[in-house]
Each structure stands twice: as C-alpha cells, then as structure tokens.
Image 1 (spheres, rainbow, N blue to C red):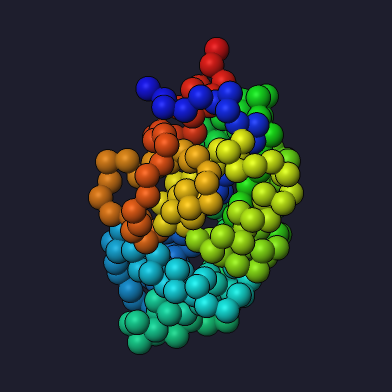
Image 2: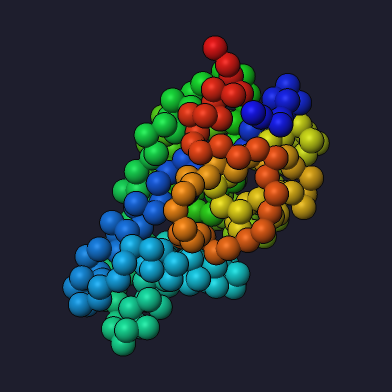
Length: 234
C-alpha cells in the first residue's frame, strides 16, 4: 500500500537510466564486443559492478561530457587487464546510450502519469544522447535537466537545483522517481523531496551498475507500471 498522497504533488521528476531506460542491458550489450575482442570474460554482474566503481570515480572529478565518461570507463576497465582500448572502441562505447532500450513498461506508464502531472527528468547524460532516449520513451518531458547543462553529475545536487529553478515550485510539491539510491535518493531526500524507488533489481543481489548507498524512499515499487496504477488509478 502506498504511503504517499499523490494529491500533494504537481510535478514528477525522473531519473532516466536504470529507471526508464534499461541501462544494465544496454551496457552489457555495449561491453560485449570490446571485452570479447580483448579476450576478457567476466560475469554480467562483475562487469556492472566494475562499471559502477569506474563511472562514479570519473563523474566525481572534473566535468566531462558523458560520452567521455563512458569512454573513460571502458579504457580503465580494459587497462585493468593490461589491454588498451582503441579510439574506435572508445567512440562506439561512448555513443552506445543511443542503443540502450527502454523498459517495456516505461512509455505507457509515462503517458498515463502525464495525464495528471507535469513531468521532468534529471539525467546524468549529454543533451544529444538523452534526446535519443526521449524518442524511445515516446514523450516530450515538460522539463529536461542533463549533466551537460548542470556541468555536474548526480549525486551532486546541481541538477536538482536547476530543476527547482525551472519548475518554480517548492520541493514539497515535487515527487522524484528513481532507481539509483546512490545517484538520486540520497541527494533528493537531503533537498527535501519525497521519493519513489523503482526497484528494478528487486530480488537480485548487489547494486548492479550503481554503487551502494543508504537512503529511505517514501515508496518502493517494482516497476513503472505499478507506479502509474497507484498515481493514476482507473
């Protein structure tokens, strides 16, 4: 049963990758060729855990576009095995976001939610790469804040602050929806937002492509379809 009164909110903001777009499937598909070509064989969960460490490290440093972050992750992961990523491999992996699939329930759930709420997205991505994902989701968000615009990556609060400026409502009127406790929920709760955890990895051990973190969401749902049915009944 939900502990939230959805009448308290005018705007829902979302994380994109991991919440709406299946970035773990997309990442594993993008890793397949470069790892195989360098003779590296690891389990999917080990690949995702290594990705989580390297991505968080790079995003915490000086700002670089997300294409560069992804390329840096691939370079670091291959270097761990004494291998060198080619420029083509780096470029292909850096642009792979455009190929990452949407979760099957995302588009319909967003469309349903949009009948009741304004929708925004706060994403650790470049403008052009996110645009390809937005097309996959079949929706034009009312507000979009990317890391390229914020020049910071979540969990840094700058993306949330930009969203507050653009929406023009107090945080208590905004509900943030995300899969990653590390990237989203810790910061969102600190800024006074109510949050919904879309626990896409429910039942699977480990954190997948996100580092571990401790946060207390106001509501936990297994997928976007469940959230939509709670927020927009009938």
